[in-house]
Length: 112
Image (tube, rainbow, N blue to C red; front, side, top):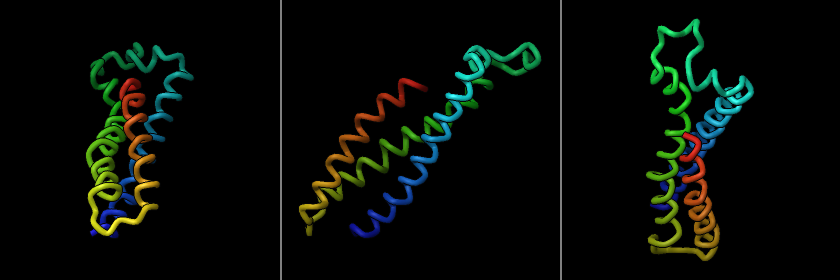
């Protein structure tokens, strides 16, 4: 079971980092344009609703948070604490990763 969990964690970590990077990149592009353009549509785009415009920026960071909370932290908890044939290095590696994921999630949620 642990090799399959590690494989799943590795795949999810790639997508989690990719989504976090693209979400942060969109935020930087919005900030470089003055910020107002990203909060409300320009006069040329007034036919678009406010919510439609804002939802274009949020999906990547929302997916980043969800992938962090639901599959990542439980998988690392299983690898660090619950699995029966446990090596000391697994706990040494997994516990700091859990702490890092738990500390990064509220910071990212504040940006959404």
